[in-house]
Figure 1 (cartoon, rainbow, N blue to C red):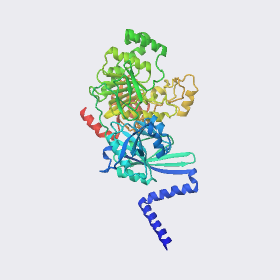
Figure 2 (figure 1 turned 90 degrees about the vertical axis):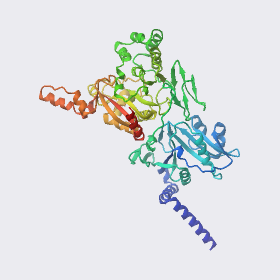
Figure 3 (figure 1 turned 135 degrees about the vertical axis):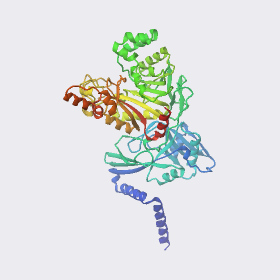
Figure 4 (figure 1 turned 60 degrees about the vertical axis):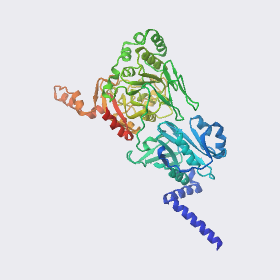
Length: 608
């Protein structure tokens, strides 16, 4: 009878624990256990993860925290103690520190009893199920949270320390991931105030793997399922609730702030830009702010001739040197100011902070710097030096030249009111060969959105994949005709086997352009919305001839009345907006950040 009573007590305790789990979690655990015991987990697997997040000010910390605990940031000397407390899973602890991840640890009597790893965005993190998290600068990812089972109250101490020592300015969310099976972790985070942002299902059958995510937060669009292939990026900002980004305050309109991988933001007025964590971010060289590695030389003239032009420009002035070393057409292209004529279409106030991506010779940045505060980013060393000479000799005090490639330039988020990307998006994937061009271009646009201040706008100009010049045989970015019309695999094969291929890197066809609908889809994936669009009838480098994609504007642009019935029919067909969207030569778009900044956009429009 005693044995039966003990068995009955155990059964009741087990049943009580199952009731606490809930039917869904109980079935999930049972299915996972069945797979493990049967050996089927070697071929078939499915997992459910929850993406959880919280605003730092919403953390629910106990009124009285455990006494005797000391919390501080762990360093290289603490790695051994951390490994004894819990062995690393995935990346070694030392490698995490080298990648600017930070560890916060709690100590009791000099012995480490708990720790959590923190990485501040913008960052691209590998997930445990084969994908990548894309995180912006307003997020901090907390992972590998572990506490000794015999020590209670250590985890709130870690969060209390983070509340007093945030991982960087402008952090709006702490984000993490929990397994649906790990009820202890889920309950601990729920007690702190974390909320479920999204569900992520992972399926594996042999070598085939797919993921499906669904947003759970309200107010940020439809909560529908999205499929993700293997090694594809998953954007965390699209799962976050709608919260406007803080407006960064700067003492001087020409000041520029960069952000270290550890989350700290630094000014760029010193000769050497070194974070307190020891990481060197860049340096000021002859007035040019050098951040990251330079892009291999590419330009309209050979490198040796560019070096001679720079030497001559330093002695006689950049205009005289350009007149001597450049052809007449290229000289007018460099010195003319018509490339910046689109500024009349943008809602820019005096003193607006503008970022010019791929500034080149400065044909856009220099004219804009007379009315706005402009930061010109150029990856090629020689072009950046030429632009700095132009800035100095023309007295453009509101122009700042940055040498670096956008993916690697650690600019702090939310500090630009307008971003200019004129003929840049198609080149973004040329140097990032291991990743597909679509993903590189998506990351490029997502990075632009991060750099926008609330209410900011992006001006983006680019060719139409099926534009009329392309249909007539004009050379594509590959240097060959018709490659943009070909299917992507065939275009890559043609470029890889052609001696006339334009790129010196010979990586195949990676300068992707799209149709009008393709661009809108790409923008939507990056969290951007098209506010207005134009067709540049003479190309985007002559923006003084731009026609809005509006029926009334198109009819006004095609108001000639030719003689003859067939000619009138052709003119009527030409005046249709769908024709311009289909075979228009080049497009220009005015983009805004998506729903998360909708209120700020409306306020900015009213101010303008």
